[in-house]
Image 1 (cartoon, rainbow, N blue to C red):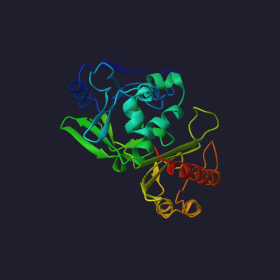
Image 2: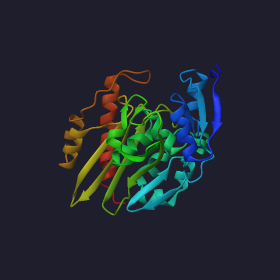
Image 3: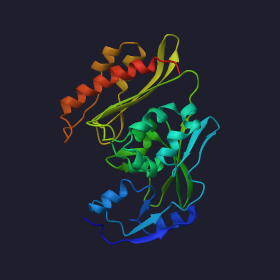
Image 4: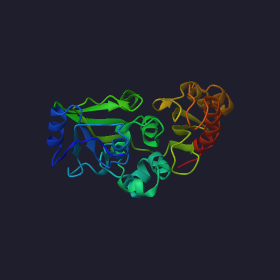
Length: 278
């Protein structure tokens, strides 16, 4: 299939893009286009205008600022894979990157686009939630910060207003007590995960504290398993598996029962990762 007709505008500044969004409520932003082009071709999306933001300077940086890793919306997945800043200060994102689709897609796809698209089976939204990160949104009234816990609202739905665009994400920089874990199960490498888990914790004596378990592929958005987090902080992995408070639905990849079982499998794997020193 081919997309429905649309107007095209290449934005040359952030103000230009925001003004176009404000004037065209059903416009869509074109960054990497790795998800958008597919939905256009299948006519799952039919915007009146595409606003190409690739010409806007300053939106592709990756830097350590005030104890936070700031990643510009236009930073490509491949760029993040090669980033020393992410490898050292955001190791959970570094560990997740090779699982995202395939090399050709990672060369064009953007981190901002993945977060804004909010696919419930995608890796980066879950990572942002596990890291207790935040999103920088820019609109006609200026910039505002949205915590990851408040950003994802449902299936492909976020807290962004129609006239706002995601301009950066920020996550706390890791330190020597930071522990991370990541695992997913897919039919083949690069496919969407049947179930995935991104996790963070802090080393506390011989145990863990501040455990955050963010699952993807088990609901209409990334979800934390808070009862399991509490059990894992007590050092009881099997109790954490039994406490998993997830409510997955059947889909084309697996039944709800299979997903629930696989969530437990991943929890055991990730729990072992969380005990490893950086």
